[in-house]
Length: 247
Image (cartoon, rainbow, N blue to C red; front, side, top):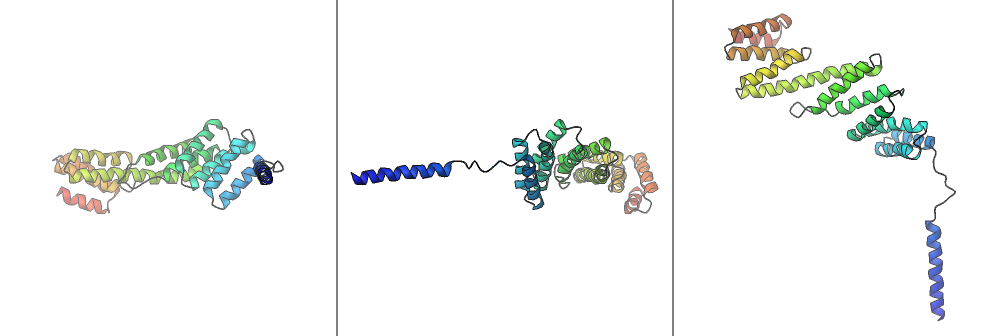
């Protein structure tokens, strides 16, 4: 009987100990919005991007009506961007743009959105959907915020984006040319001539027009394309090759 009482006492004490251990420590105060924001910023500085993004989101969740919550939205998007979580960054940026259109950081939000697409541009042999989205987003930055540093950088990136899209058209055009699908090839090269005149691919595109028009027996069109090529790029290797094609 004594052993039974001792066992029950032990169980009771153990229950008290567990209860005490699981009880929340009321002496620990929850962090303020500013404290959480600064913590997230420190994590960002340490390149702990995933953790920083989570902490910035915590600012929004725990202190949704504070000024720090608005700052946390854009910084959280930046943390996702640095962590290469572009879809998460875009979601955050779209929310920021929707709910804070007059914020002082709105130009940066549009710029960062463009960067998210720009960083996902892949080789010309693959689908160029992100390149097209980057093009649209970069144009928005330039149109909406023309006198900002973001517009200046967006203009530089826009040139590279155009060049990439032109490269894709050239890639497909060359494929059709090898398949002797001359009309489809001509359409692709003509897109470069008409829409991407300032890119590095324009000389070859004009040459390909001369080449295909000659193959199709359209000598008038071939000579016209050659004149454009010769006038603008008289010393180009493509001009020399085109001259040989016309002989």
